[in-house]
Length: 422
Image 1 (cartoon, rainbow, N blue to C red):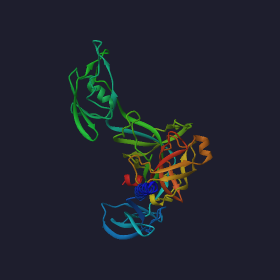
Image 2 (image 1 turned 45 degrees about the vertical axis):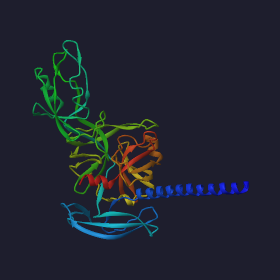
Image 3 (image 1 turned 180 degrees about the horizontal axis):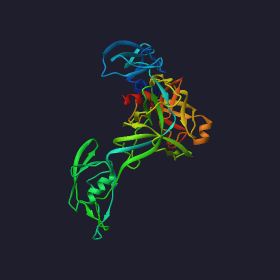
Image 4 (image 1 turned 135 degrees about the vertical axis):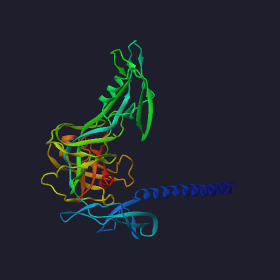
């Protein structure tokens, strides 16, 4: 009797164990499937000469649909030493991905692109930008004429706001803002502010300070300067640099650009990166007319862009761009300058994320070149924009350093930099 009971309990245990095992197996399969889907990009570019593409996955991609439509304007292409306008039609392809060539997993859309060749950068550049309006860094306190401490702008104006008008008058500099408020006679001022893409109006009552001037208690900025690295120049002298946007160091807000200038720059010092402390390149900017390289016309999440006044001396567009699906884990190089001499340094690409986030940390890599490790400790601030080269193609640009490990860094796909400049 006891034996039968034990057998019954054992069988019950077996059934429950099988059920639990089945649930766990299903969860593992679901996770593996989701991981596989995430490893396959939704959209890609392919070269017109080679429309096939492959990923380091057990997935076979087969072209199933072709569509041609008119594009919105011309694009320039470099081929055989000449610049020419290519056909304004745009060809899109659709591929079906099958696991082991048998099980459908995902559909990928591809846009056919003409070959693009660029001059690789790697040289340090000085960046000077003017904000579109006066950027608010924060609010402050004012000691009034009576000795009372007041904060007239607190809870009305926020860090990251752009003041574009005061009492209907357009302002471009902090000096204009200070002058109008200083001469308001104590009457309220109406600030027109750009806040998170929307224009609003705010009324602020200035306070007469103990120095006899009227103030509203704001810390502001109207320009910014820094050092970065040039990424590429096209044959028609369009450039891209940094691989990320120019942001205010205090607020973290990406600067609303009015205009800017790219200058020559020289590296004068290196602070080596250590665990928990990012290093940096320190440099001087040549603000002379002779040191001017070109205008800064766009500031985007993927970098800064403009037109070079002339092509880099003695260099031509010899590097083709490589699309994201061409990047492989393994050996690669970065081109950068840490001692005023542009050179290539060995890195190892450890991960490629096809689903970019807003910070464009799509390529993960580690510096393996002992020369660079000796000089800088790895990736440091100021190297942002250094082009990443693999298999003779420019595939990306350095964007961020790992705070806890300066040997490691992130990069952006070169196709995303080019796309943001289109």
